[in-house]
Length: 226
Image: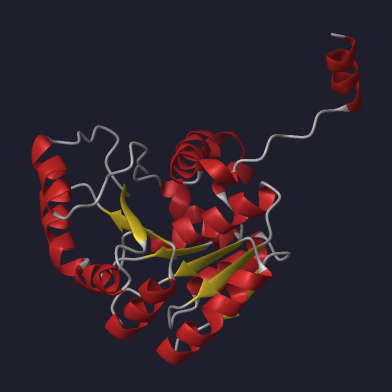
C-alpha cells in the first residue's frame, strides 16, 4: 500500500506524520519504506536516527517517483511518501501512484477553505484514476480547546473529503522529537499524550495494519487450559 502525505501547503505536519507513521507500521511488524519526496530531505534524515532499520529512499524527481513507487510497493508492505509543500508536479506524480492520501490541515476556517486550492491536484488524480487515491483530511497542529465547527464540516464535505475523528494537537514535543532523533512514544512521560493521540489517528485510518501483540508463553498456556 502506498500512503502519501499530501498538501501543497507547507508547515502542516506532513513530515512529522510521515516519520511517526513509518515507525508505527514497522513496530506493528510490517515491512516499510519511507519515500522522502521533499527537496529538504527532512523525513529521511529524521527517520535515519529514529528507526535506522527502516529503509529510506529519496525521490525528488517526478519521473523517478512515477517509475520507482510501484517497484517499492512490491518490495514492502507499506510505502509512506512524504510529499513536498509546493512542487505541484511532484505532488501530482505521488498522487498518481498513491492508494491513500492523508491530507494534514490546520483547524481553522481559513485553512479548510484553502484546501479547495491545495487539493486541486488530488482531484485531477482522482479524475484520471476513477476515484483513486482515497483521501482523508487529518486535522493537525490544532489548539487543545479546538472545536470542529459545522462550517468546517461543511467545507470538508463540499470537497468530498472525510475528516478523521482523531486530531493532532499543537504540542512542543512534536517539534522536539526530530532534534532528539526519535518519535513521541519513546520520549517518556512527557510524550504520553502525544503518543495516545497519534496512535488513535493511525488506528483510525489504518485499522487493517494493526497486528495483535504476541502472547507470552504463560498467557498461551492459560488460554489453552481455558
